[in-house]
Length: 292
Image 1 (spheres, rainbow, N blue to C red):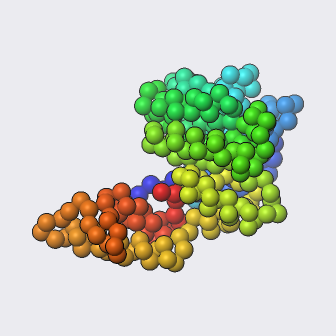
Image 2: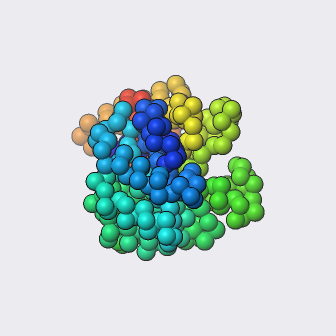
Image 3: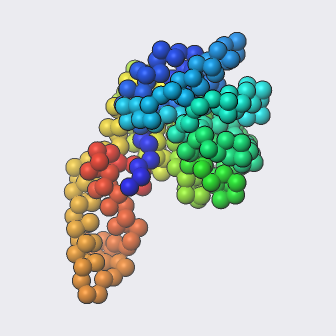
């Protein structure tokens, strides 16, 4: 069963010596960033190092998947990133496009380089991007079949909104992004928690976004990976409930007259509830749980 990533760790494209360390940090995905984490005067140097590394790495590096965040496709640096990918031997697990506001951009990336990546992530970080999130997500059915997730870019978005980069300031955008992603069958990835010394706050925020429907929490430091993963684990009561419900569902399906809904501990259970319980059990057995 395919499991969406729980975590994605960013590492600067300016720091090639950190690429192997980041991939060994335990995150499900490591994103080498060519955009915000690279000084404008060092873009070309970073680009060369990133695609050289991506073209020579082992297919699986400590089990982590590799992502690259481009510069905006409608910028000169973004076009240079695309040209460098096509000229290289690189093939990445995820290609992340920032500041997406038009689904057509995702179609162009597919037309140019669909054989160079396994999945595409649209980073939504402007008010216009939020407004168009549903249309962007729908491009998975029209021109961008490898689109896997919408990701919230909270820092840029909060600046443009004039909002605080905090829970209240991003709550509306989070809800709209999750709804847009889920309406198209996509994953929803959340913005990093910037308080590196606030690991309890990171766990609390991760659990909160999971309850909203997000499937992945991004990170900016290796110390954040383990707390993020811990937030995905079910508590004992939740796992006990799921195990008992799955057993009851299996028993019901084994009867001569299986039903679509049945009574369990005073609660009417239908197929979506049973599917949720099965996911909890499956992911717990694999050592992880994703959102509903």
